[in-house]
Image 1 (cartoon, helix red, strand yellow):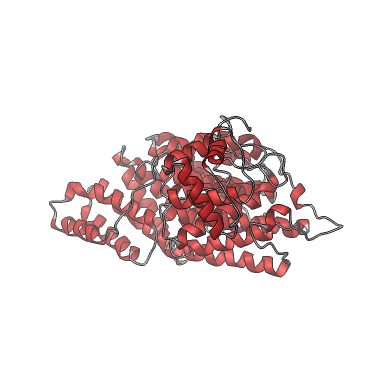
Image 2 (cartoon, one colour):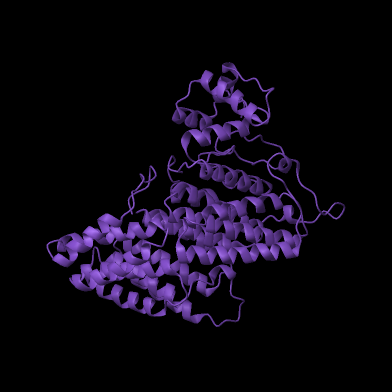
Length: 497
């Protein structure tokens, strides 16, 4: 509200370290570079933006987003700066509050604009070689609290309804941000096929090599969504957007861009719900929960999983529920709750085998197969074994079952299974076998761009330290030391894996 300080802009301005006069000069220079040489900002205007909450006219918010993105080395959107006008079509209903600290959910008609702006800034960071390490993750409890009521209501598909007088048109907000264009069913089919290609590449080679391509494709889809197509096509486009946003998030997580990954998971949940697919929205949030467990925040993962379950509605298929339970089991294992973990894994297995195939298999669940169920069992037991060494034998049993079924080229999952097996062997006092599986993983990691595999390898290497006097293990640890890539600092606010 005008007259009150803009807390978001104030915080980011403090992080950037500029003076108000310096920011005014930078705005004028950047605006001229973006084709607006007539813009003339001064110190007093910057003060009003920060101290009284005055929202400048376009293109100033976009110019500021570019400047803060470059300065902080992570995506900063107009939304993040608190510079969204209220009461205008395509703008967010809420500017954030104590209950909704991140301004989610935003207005339904705002989703395409948020998606396109965020991906555009992400691509800019890619081009300039910056890294998204300047922000902390939002707590899982804050995210689930902010999204609870929104996810539990039926999707508002007003934006998908065709305009029979003018079926293909773009809202005014679209023209100055992206080159919106109508599409037909053939183009949507090609986009859906591209998702499968990207998904397979990610599973085989990790998220680093194709992340920018996925983000670019998602940016293009955001432009397409600026048009109001027929309801059927619009829903399919929202489905493509949700799938690409999940992939962008997963690939970002895979290479250690944690706050960026979390934002993509939230965008994916919004896109899925816009398309009327609440189960897909829940699955997107389950990815954020897995991220939280990986980063050592299992309690927050459980908050997100509660929302993923309850917000997915009645159409949640048994296989999806089984996958949800495996994530919860990993979180419970991280908290040392062995009995609850075992009970949850049992529920996952019962649900997995109960699926009779009557319902059409969801495309985004195609990769959760028996080997993935067993791989998550192995990971949960291996994690529990840190506090309960007796669980190591169960981890080896399930890792062996998973590896016996890994025949579809998903090399990253195979690496994780080898590392689960190696860790379980170290905990179970079998260092020779542990070294064998560790070397299998290490060999495969050379052709994989996943940072998560290195995180897991270093966890295993910590367990190997107790056998450092053994020549075989000493050699293995030296191989790991030489092979480990130089690490950039983990994002502030993220616990070590």
